[in-house]
Length: 465
Image (tube, rainbow, N blue to C red):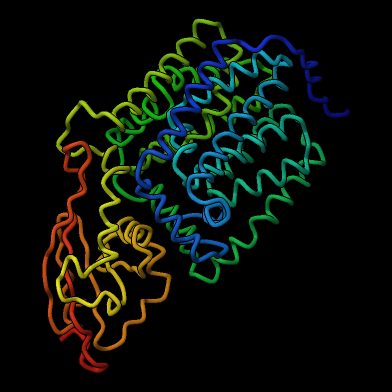
């Protein structure tokens, strides 16, 4: 008996563009541009910018596509272009699902105000290309364009490892339909072919990328508390209305949209389970909300309005706080991530911090974390490295800076700590600290302390006692 064929795609119909959708898309576009150009470099984006200066087939944390795009487009264009193209891809997917351009505009408007999509479309991270190529891959799988699906899924895998969940969603939909077209094997082969260089890179580096993600996602302390944090995170990054509706859509959505329903529920279930094992990040199941927006675009107007209004309210509230903060917190994590970093430019002229110092004699700048070391590199152009870092990072895979005897280095930490003993012991003297204040609108966001480590001891003497 032959396997059943997929349902025929509805014929796309053109109609007037909903004015409300255009307003939402316009507001979203203006806010994205303002956030991208009106804030400092995002706290992790500088790290990926450092990757772009050392292009490779893999990195300790993620696959390489984000670094490649930053190297070609720069940090602002990478996020803005990926974000805009993702909105367009959601439009195309929804148009083919419903055969109605009005539904496509609704889906695009819904996605444009999903908080996690807004972040990925403003600040360049691996999430930026992941969301784009996940959406393109889902669209191609829906249309059974197997070659395009393979290329899109391969690029999604080159963006972030969780892209493999799209393949799982497709297999679940195929199992339910009892139908696996031969073209799907071509899709899988192309995706694997794209990903092989990342596997080879990991094999040459003791599988650090794969092992890190497994430990990060499943090893640690978890339970009801971390699962509760996961649920709260989804209400924040997905939206207070979209998250529960995504679950409703996954369970009770149209039968013919089973592939999209699985693309929504698989990331939520997978990372929800991971949250019971270890504390994760709220953005991990972000791809679920692409299909959820397409599904909500076909729901009752009241639900669509609720998702749009709640999402828009969240992004506008966050956006206004970024530029005109009113609420005060002991440690404002949002402002910490995107404000006050540019004061690190002063490290480019260390003679102003330490009078009499020869700036040309500074061989490198060290920091206790990869984020801070990367920001220093971005704002100064200096050679940077990490020391005494509590977290292994790509810096541990790169060669150590070359420092000649007699040269100086700087150590910069946020609120401390001082230079680690094993580093300080290699130099003849330590001076400092000098304070650098990263303020925004009369608020202290960062307090950096800078030490000068003078004159590396001659070879043989620069070892820790």
